[in-house]
Image (cartoon, rainbow, N blue to C red; front, side, top):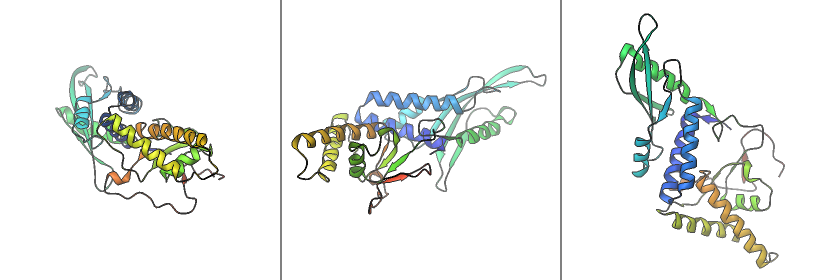
Amino acid sequence: MERPLYQALASKIQAMGNCEKARNRNWYDLHKEAAEKLVESHLPSGSGFDAGTQIDWDAMEDDIQKGKAGRRLVFQTEYHHMDEFGVYERWTEHQVVVTPHLAGGFDLRVTGKNRNGIKDYIAEEFHYALFTLVGFNGQKEEESRKLIGLSFSRCLRDIIAAKVQPEEVYAVVSNTRILSNTRILTEQELDHAAEQAVSTYIDSSFSERDIDMHKRIARHVARDWFFSGKLIQPRLGPDLAPTITGLDTWAVINNKPWEK
């Protein structure tokens, strides 16, 4: 499944915010590096944008500290202007500020000097680039099964039972509400939720050893989903998590059938 670049970038910034609250510096740095690679691969570079485009990390990390991660995107760029003879003569510096629009998409504002009407051109270039479709990891998706999970406990069960491979999971929409201020508390909440999920399907046929193994794997998978940004928790906002009926645990998102 692909999504517009601006959504992929906002997701990475929001994931950094989650990691900041959980004090998980390792995943914080990984999301930051992934965001920088997206910008390097897709936003204007060359043809006047000779210094390329960079994320304004001062602005983004200030948003993260204020609990506003992912509510806007701020980029820095410069444009190298030519004179009437085609000779480069001077630079102008610009910020590009992207904010979500309630009707869908985004609003885009360019700061800096409007030499030769360049701000309209910069806005057009960024607008086009930010709608580029990218895969979950910033690249075009391979032709393989990708799934969105619709139940935290059932998805953990299927991972543990090897019905679904971890790399096939695009995201999991969960009814959980895990978002603490420290990494230790977050991991404790994740571990508790994972163990509770295991308890929903174990029965008398499970040995103590089996139960311990299932809980250990569930804790590891739950932490990976959370800190990689794959765990989506609508109840942290105004939205409701999906109601699961029957066997609708997974949604296939690349139109390939899945044999249950």
